[in-house]
Length: 238
Image: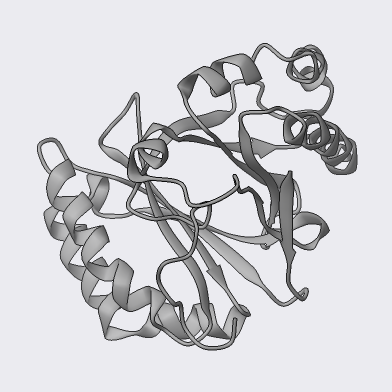
């Protein structure tokens, strides 16, 4: 069964998307991992997970969760992050920059996870795959798109191989939504895209999406994520 954790409405998420220069992907990966532990120890941090795109391995996505906007802003101003941005803009990042979206969770869902009985082992965790999609609604169609996404979420959460399905909305652009989901393995994801609720959305997306060729990424986690049994403590204020 799914286990849903809720938080108050102040919780914010951020999802930086970073692309490495040619030949610099491993260096960027190592640099991201080098700031992960310290970030998770910051007051107000709830999650800091790193993922790498399967089809474009020079692309990295981070999922961050913070107690409130103030905690996120303090994090951005820390020497750890200002030094990281300054160094990587010169050494590893395509175009010397990266994109980030600040998000609010829809329906107050923070972590929506499937936890099997007992501890999962490293081999099982290594099989897991994740997917992120960035969607932009047409003017006047944001709520209709949200209804479609909620319907997909209901169907996806009923799939035996699903780990979670979260919907987020941009804090800066109410037309922009981010979907993040996890699956026990590639076969479970492959089955997911064949499900009737996905076929229904695909047939209807031209009605609500400003771009039907929306951005999405199939991902593998680097290290432990919010979908795993917690073995590390995050910052105070959880």
